Amino acid sequence: MGNKLRLRFNISYPGFALDVDLELPGRGITALFGHSGSGKTTCLRAVAGLERAADGYLEVNGEVWQDGGKGTFVPTHRRALGYVFQEASLFSHLSVRDNLNYGLKRSAAKAQGVRFEQAVEWLDIAALLGRRPEHLSGGERQRVAIARALLSKPRLLLFDEPLAALDLKRKAEILPYLERLHDTLDIPMLYVSHSPDEVARLADHLVLLAEGKAVASGPLQETLARIDLPAVFADDAGVVIDAVIGGHDDNDHLSRLDFAGGTIYVSRQAKPLGRNVRCRIHARDVSLNLEHMDNSSILNIIRANVVAVADTDNPANVLVRLDAAGTPLLARITRRSLQHLAIRPGVGLWAQIKAVALLG
Amino acid sequence: MLSEVDIAALLLTLKVAGIATVLLLIFGTPIAWWLVRTPSRWKGVVNALVALPLVLPPTVLGFYLLVLMGPYGPVGRFTAEVGLGTLPFTFGGVIVASVLYSLPFVVQPLQTAFAAIGERPLEVAATLRAGPLDTFFSVVVPLARPGFMTATVLGFAHTVGEFGVVLMVGGNIPGKTRVVSVQIYNHVEAMEYAQAHGLAACLLAFSFVVLLLLYGVNPKPGRRYGQ
Image (cartoon, rainbow over all chains, first blue to last red; front, side, top):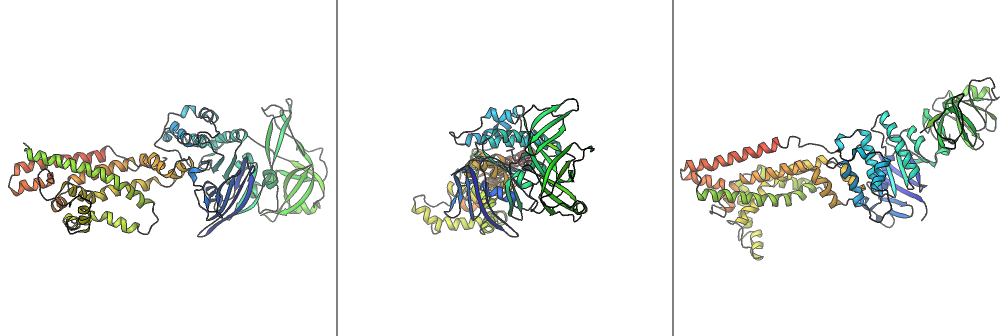
């Protein structure tokens, strides 16, 4: 029992094998991140029962869906899950309304779930109900597909790169809806992606997959700040910080974000005080200084201690893991600077943050 | 213009074709679905068997059916045993022969239509709690509708047009097995060209209208799922 997902799969194909054994949180978004061919989609399909692992175990918040040892395998249509596929998966012979009703009609009547009107409102698709799928844009189709998955009263939501087939503009259009689901729903979601931006923005927990194996699994902030992993996001290496809007300065058009390790200023946000925000700081946007620079144009300077140093893909650069009163930070600096400043674990210094990206 | 016997032949033909088409859809649909979905190594064998009537002379098919369903054939013995009598030279025999003869014309369009649907809609349906049978009727049948149209029209039209098999298995019994194509043959044998013309023109017009429907009403048989 318990509020968690337990999954263990062992699937072999010619030239590829998936071999994972994970314990994931029973709520919030867990991102399965990896390059194409890393096995993330296979893993998701195995969770859905669309792929059958001869040897596997799957437990969703206390309910066993697969147990290879006992020969238990609940077929996909008896699993209370919602699946959003990468490309348009709406039934072309049904209207949007009938697509939504398809899963709703077939879900267990007594199961707790989202009401039709609620899903329609959340995903803003009231105007589309009478249309046929071929008359929808790519983004609209995905919104309908998400609503349809919600309406089947899932106890687990699975997303297989739902934004991958969309252009940047459409992606930006869907992300807020996914964030809303994240804030509203109490069920676990598995989100397959190869986009660091999506992962940084949406995920609470991160699983890194490479060549069919889970290389790392842990809370997002912690996992992103790990430098022992082979180039997590490569050039996009960086940390995610959950902060609170602590103040607005209307003279300078700035907003102050407070987090455990200090404060950072960003351009004025139209969000109320106390609102939680998530921001991302790329390692390449952080430089290090042994002294506090009072005469710097850089606004955000944070006191931190060096925890560890690691190599990067580029031999000229190193990645420095910092600790700012409990909040991990990453800085990418040159090897020459590392030696020049004698930076090593334990050294206290100032991290200068050149850019902060607010997510959502 | 058309004599009473001619009209009886026409009506019999429509009856045979109608019943045969219903049976063809009932039997052809699971065969086509199985052929598309199965990983079995017997798939090739079944495919070849279903397609045989396309290449066999109808007399060959008719001959073997006659032997099989006759009083000394295994099928004939079975039907006699269960009290159905023997099928050759009966209406039932013509129906059985017609179904076998037209089977590829129904199975093949269905196979093409089922294959075009692909795996994804079936997976989507499963993730929305639809069991296999539910998925077949709520997703596969509607998506394969153009294929069903083609199969129905071709199966019906092909049964209307058959001659050799009916002659071999059914003979030439008025009201029971004498269908239009056989009746035309009778007229020509008897040098009654005017009467032969009347029936032949009916079949010609019918076939043309059927094909027109097929190509005119159904212009995009390959409309793919999700596009």
